[in-house]
Structures are given as C-alpha cells and as structure tokens.
Image 1: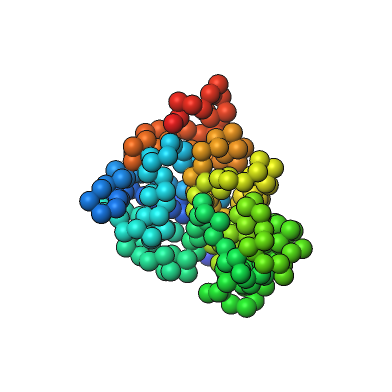
Image 2: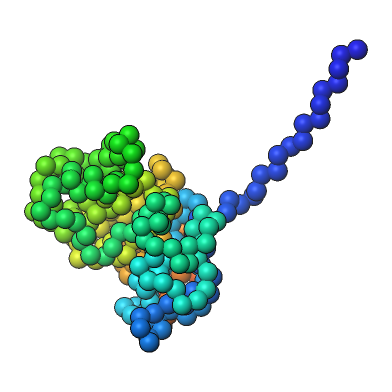
Length: 250
C-alpha cells in the first residue's frame, strides 16, 4: 500500500493588505501654536490618496510630521507596520519614504545627472543604475539634458527633476506637497500622469496635497478634506466625480 499523502493545510491569506501608512489622532504644531488636531488617515499599498483644503488648513504640517521634519505632539504614525512617530527624516528615507516638496528642491549649480545621483546616495550602485533607468523612462527630458545645469531648467522641469531625485531612493511611499504649484498646465498634466504610472509600474503608494482638484480627480483613489487642522470629510474618487462643484471642499 502506498504511503498516504500528508495533509496540506491551505495558507490563509489576508483579504486586505496592511496599510503602508496609518496615522491616528495626530497632533502637531510649531512652538506654542497647535496646527493639527486628531488627524486620522491611511494609505493602502498601490493607492493614491489626496488631502485637499484651503491654505493654512494644516496639510503641509501634517505631511512634515509624517516625514519626520516635525515631531508629533501626540498620536501615532505607522509606516509599513512600524511606529515612526519619533523617527528622523533620514531613517524614514532609508525605510522607503520620500518627500517631494512644493518648492523646486534641486541643486541649481549641479547637473541633472549629479542631482539624480545625490537622490540615490544611500542606495547601492546597482540600485542607483536601475532607478536612474526608471527615472529616465518616466521623464525622457531628464535623460536628454542629463549634463545640463539644473538651475537652467524651467519650473516644471525642476519639479520633474525633484520627483526624479525622490524616486532614486527606491521609495515605497512618496509624499507630494502641491506638485502643480507654479508650473504650466501641460507640465502639471505630465507630472500627474507620471504619478499614476509609478503606481502601475512600481506599486508605489502616494499621499498628495493638492488644491488643483480637477487634476487630482484624474489620478486619486480617495481624498481627505482638511479644515482648520482637522480631517472633516473623506470621499472616494467616484463621489468626487459626481460633484457639480469642488468649492465646498475648501
């Protein structure tokens, strides 16, 4: 008689993957002034989540606290299942988080290629080479002008370069602070298309602050509405697209 086959138990897989980013009860501010109150939000793997709100609503403060530029006054922040509430920016970058600021953050005296290499400073040479190829595929103009000084680029091109620098660190989550600010509509469209391509091709998750809601609606999965330092509303992209106006979001 042949020996009986051992029972093989099925492996139970979770229905929903754990969140890449989870923020609970976040409190943040500057000096004696509290700006952010009890903020809850989350970002799932491969998801693009937006935060909209008027100037001064606390969006950038929230983003800076998540990234580690500011230390939280209370609440919890978890990135890929780890508590990062008091972790430095440097450690967050090494763990797979990147920030693309609203400012055109590039080194103007250095070439495009040198800026990109700096973005991948903490990765291995092999990883940098693969990341560089990916950035050039995403933004061909950077490859065409790799030896040009970054300071000679237009505002939109500098924004592409700053995004490219963030990508050089091979992040799992990118935080974008108003990527459309100060750049032409055509380049804004290209930058937003690139975000959706990053999710499709590399599985990167994105948390994006943006006031250009018509552009945002083209790429996001969900949006949080922030007013006076608090999250007051959450809507799916389907709910947003069904709106006749976006003015009451602000």
